[in-house]
Image 1 (cartoon, rainbow, N blue to C red):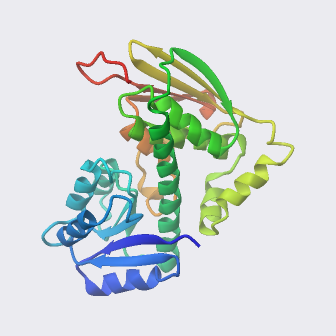
Image 2 (image 1 turned 120 degrees about the vertical axis):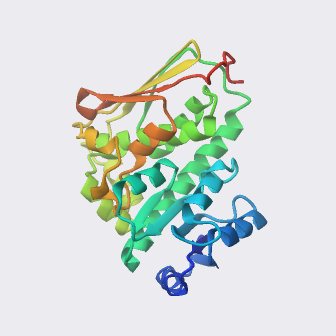
Length: 306
């Protein structure tokens, strides 16, 4: 069984003990801190890959949760570390701000054991996907030829990981853009070709059965011949990636921006995060079956990525 190091942060000792009790399982090694500054000092004492997830309160002395989140996201070696904020603040603007800063999830107190475990497990799974994508990027950096145009087909999430890593090498920020590409590619498989609904994915994550159900559906006659088409073009160092699945489409509008209605859900933020953190432009069409993403070159830069 794989073990994960989790860091729990809260200046309220009762809340800290409650979180620790909720997450007291054999595959979690728990570390605690009473405020953001103590947590940051502990994080800096450990290697970048030591912690797999941070769960932090917002209002704390010395350094609050928002301040700690900003420091983590500014650290090139730790910026993809999932950061879950918990607070009693229900102000939609404050919630939106923290998500735009890179918070993985935002939990409203009081939090149940089932909700916390589900969100942490979802964060850990996404973190592993991102790490695999980053590792692939590192291996391909020196061998990826510059590409002007190409078309790809893929069917599985593993293929989506590899392809997102490959295409990100054409940009100035491979690590972050590979994450956004993978979110879009994964959505085309899960919700597009395989027809997994939002509510079904919620239940499957809660039951830790999402990957098993994806594999099951990929083998069924109605799904096994479906694939996702990715068209890529590069012009004046501006990358365009257009992704088209073979599903029935979906109501994409409500997933492009923050919604208070889904704040406690264990997924549903991937498209919004990709749009705000990875791409300069993101446009859906064809009833949600097609999405085009653009990555512009850095301002005042005409250099191609090596």
